Image 1 (spheres, helix red, strand yellow):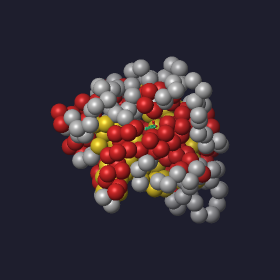
Image 2 (tube, protein in one colour):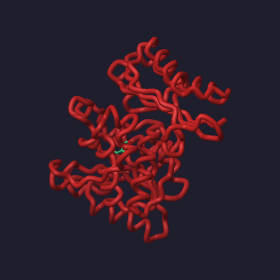
Image 3 (cartoon, helix red, strand yellow):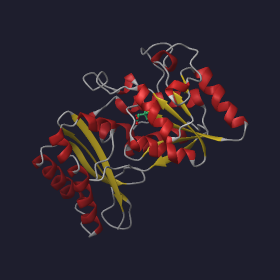
Length: 294
Ligand code: PAF
């Protein structure tokens, strides 16, 4: 698409591609006293995304960005095959009530190319859990989200709770850098059988799709044992991993952590826990989490 795409009604939702266009549009709403919330996505949208749009719409305008950020995929990951269908996404966003779709090209986000990028990194948290398996991932996420926030200058931004570690890291980044934006947490949207909705679920075969809800069931079982007083976190994690392996998952980790900061949970006293898991099922890497308290 060229640079003059501002009001293309055939896309069903207003699509803009440049920094100047998105800023002008958001500024117009903000000058009129409307709150604008950004929902950053990588496209391949589904109901979980439209739920976030609906949440954004509760307080004003919802702007959605779609940018398949190349830097957050390590070599060998699914960047090339990541599903891209702007027309379908735009149709869904219109139904979901989004006010604007910002779909920049890579050159708009990274005008100097991808070499020697200015980076934003939240150390510590970014190297743990998923970060231990995808060591360059979270620095790339924080670096692109910082750019998207500074390009669009929204009043609020929504990150879904399914990517729990990402949510905490991005919240930390916004706080540490004093970025004047409210961070809103979006709920996890699940299929009827408990599987957390994800763009990557479409990589699952029919047979794998049948097995996939086990991931959520295992986390719920862990939560139940925690609520019943089991504080042997290592055993809980081991049992969950073993069960997943038996069901033909290849788990990266199952971890019981403090919900507030992902630190190790205390073995006694009050605590809100989060149980997080990442596991491969065929060629799909699924993540999920469940929070609970005594
Ligand atoms: O969660 C995602 O879809 C991505 O990591 C995000 C936040 C849009 C950054 O590319």
